[in-house]
Length: 460
Image (tube, rainbow, N blue to C red; front, side, top):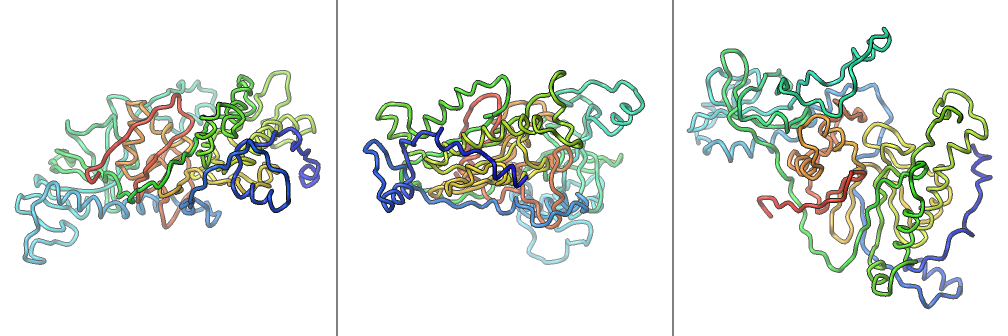
């Protein structure tokens, strides 16, 4: 591998000089007494900081159970839900301390006979209660491990379905003490999924089920104040899919030429110079497809020939060259995606520098995690490459990406289906997917179309 890296060809002679450059690169050219082109524009500068450290693996340990992740999620969001439930459903608590508090049954009883239950096992039948917990959605159509057994026994498994919602779906609420089935006509079952933390108001029936009268979500987290000082832009690109046979490389090159200032009028160059940073939101490269005549390159257990290695690495080398063209002109952040050479489990870790030997030589390039959170000139941006949203679409009735994005903000969790149906790292003491602050810009990559929406919380 070291010999291959040393023998990596340089493509500098293939890259044209950017028409819009970073100010610090222009200063370095001046120090070296290089001749500056009169047509160059200085790209706008912005303050930048990233807060994605919680998505990095501190330890590569995969022996932990996932139950602790759910307990951590519930423990983090439950206090906030209790306060919201008290404000919405309960009158102020009585002034006498301790009289109405029973250990294991209730926190306190309100004047309107609504009890804030402490644990599910402490519910009292036929008494209006409020309980908090983690939702689990039972779906008969959801795939299970028996399908793998059916394949081994040569039994034809049922066909894969794009969506597993049915009229027989049920919801179960559970906490660290027990679980209870939720029933009632006020439950939007088709819009709910496994893993979200909710508070429900209702009564326990003699049958042992809980009849839901109303349901409450954590809602939008607090948002930092935002006072933009100047006009600057962040470009978002996803789905480059370098290496895909049906892709037209000229379209991607045209995009790069626009960002670097090689196309457009003088008026457009002023706009292009205000693009301070570009974020590559996953699915940047696609491995070559296997054909009946071609080599079976996806069988990684066997030793690959030089021809197979070259064919496998060709898309990565092409992407390295394209990213280098952008990094020569502006700040570039690269997020991994579902098709990229990165780990499968969320959160995905940054690209290895060995894959991008040319681009990593630029100080303007940064390989980041997926999800990714950062601040540019006081604007908080947060987003991911689309895996959490695509996974949610399989278990709800809607396919509207914007609606699902808004729901994840109101659930205060960007990947609620992890680890149930979305692979993730077994975090033990924290859940990094919890949204403790509301971003000013929330983006999701690799969707079918570009759409936007503005939502406003109760506090503006």
